[in-house]
Length: 330
Image 1 (tube, rainbow, N blue to C red):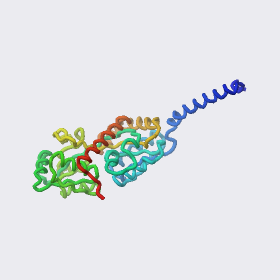
Image 2 (cartoon, helix red, strand yellow; image 1 turned 45 degrees about the vertical axis):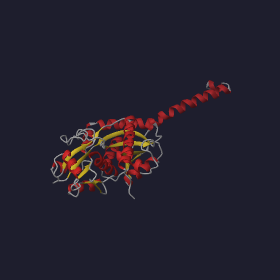
Image 3 (tube, helix red, strand yellow; image 1 turned 30 degrees about the horizontal axis):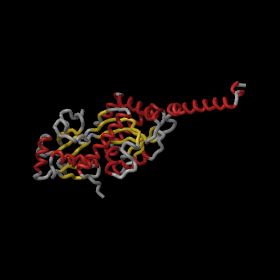
Image 4 (cartoon, rainbow, N blue to C red; image 1 turned 90 degrees about the vertical axis):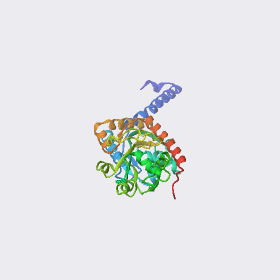
């Protein structure tokens, strides 16, 4: 018979307490080692087929292969991302519900809508996967060759120029552009969705548009003209097109991004493991090529860097909304 069974009651209790403590201490390790033990849902707060959905499916497929459980993309579009974000934010923080999101929904929606979640405080950032530049394009026939000529024409306002917007983020970016270049007569024509917004400038219904590279084939074919890239650096697919910052235009850093998050309270061991795997995935030549094919700039950051970006973007959008007086109609 084991000797501890003959020990005094006090000593047996102490030994039992030590054993319980050791077992409890081992639980988080075992939990992280076993994760995932069942399918994981990756919520995308947009409809299927867009670039965010494509990125989610690329990452989900690789995580499934590496971690041995299905990562299932669940599209929950509507209300500029708010519906899907609300579903993810209310999910159990156990690592089995994740959110693939963009700057427009993550950092802007909580500024302009009365959401039940916060841009940063309601989440555990996992990894910034890629940054997404915008390009300002002009319709065929608009008598401008570069951004400076467009700005001068827009400021003159005779006749007023028009710009198409297809999301809250682009509406705000257009309003901010009007302010920084001093073109109050620039008409902000709002369309239902970014694809319709892009078609508007391709068809010549409006003069210019902020575009997430949907119009790249038309740019290459000379059907529309790229005036400037809205991002910290030039786009790889348009190396000769300057950024707004290069042109001396300030307060117009509206690059978007795609990133993976989990509900607040998700165990750090799970967040760290997912982040490490996503970073490895993003750095593979295959994923680099796929992301660049979507005109995304691959990043693959850690949680801390991603959290800082979300916080910075949230603060920027708060300032821009205040400066432009932007309000949701209806």
